Length: 206
Image 1 (tube, rainbow, N blue to C red):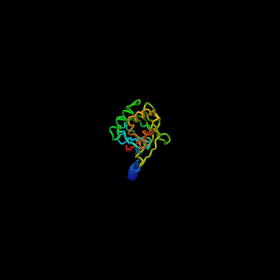
Image 2: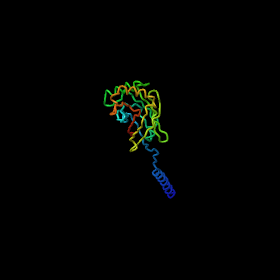
Image 3: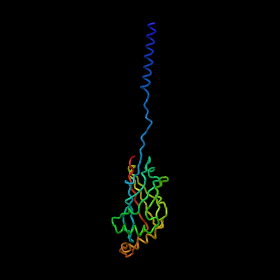
């Protein structure tokens, strides 16, 4: 009987040891993986433009100091930027020359339809970027060249032809009030239809 009790006791210890070993050897698997998030923020984004005057095509730079859109995120730079809707108050135009600012706001934008805002959407299709831009009651796609450095710094550039937005009448109105200022050495006053656009932003980590 003592021998049977001894063997039963040994068997009990063996079972407990096996159970403990099984628990300790169970792998602790963490199925959650950290996903990188890209965030586009208005305060990290700027919109600059370059217009041209005289037959020598002298550049005149400026910017819009206010850009409105809701913060947008994505798992890549393209996903964060794609379908980003934005609006730009014309009142935020700034060229470092108050007199010029007033002329552009009143004699150019002021002669258009929907004079308060420029609005649009960034769209990406097969790696091709466009800004679907609404100005003067007209919506047109503005093709954009895009550079992304360090996966987070983004520079988008394009050239508007004002005729595409039916804005040649507004351009003529501006040229009238700037007639002498837009004369070159040849005595010809000219304001060009092309306007270069530069949008830069930094995609922050979410």
